[in-house]
Amino acid sequence: MERTSPTPKTVLVIDDEAAIVEIIQTVLEGEGYRVYGTISPLEGVEIYRQHWPSIALVISDFRMPQIYGDEVLKRLRCINPKVALLLVTGSKEFLPTDFLKQGLRGLVEKPFRLNELVKQVNESVASVAL
Picture 1 (cartoon, helix red, strand yellow):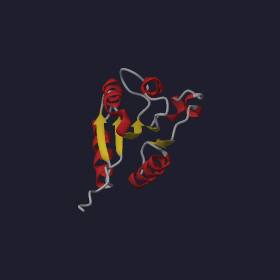
Picture 2 (cartoon, helix red, strand yellow):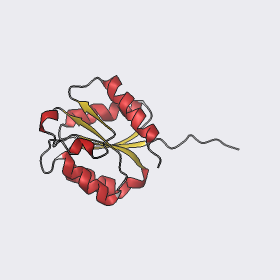
Picture 3 (cartoon, one colour):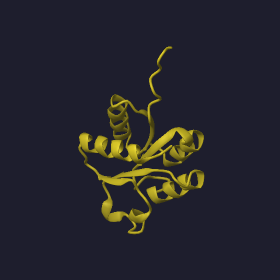
Picture 4 (cartoon, helix red, strand yellow):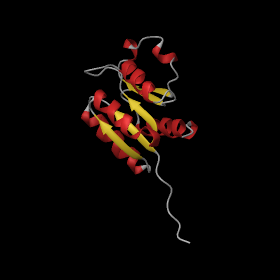
């Protein structure tokens, strides 16, 4: 009997800074994750719509053109009310206070250390039952 490797956990990264998306994508792929990445929050919602059963965690910035992170979360929850979202932002002072109480998996402030981000992602994914 041939053994197959388990399907990697999938993460979606949404950040309007392409360099941030690329860095997170590269690091998480090195940790064994499958990663979708986009600089458009609207495209991120569409990627989630198409692939949500396999996406264990969404990593999103808050302040982005088109729509902010709270609207991203609202739209993702219309697709899957149990969506897991890890917020990565350099604008913590601009977050609505109720947004932090909406069941986020965590908050990582920019600039961040990659090992801390990986730790948060691993903990968040481990706690998500797909």
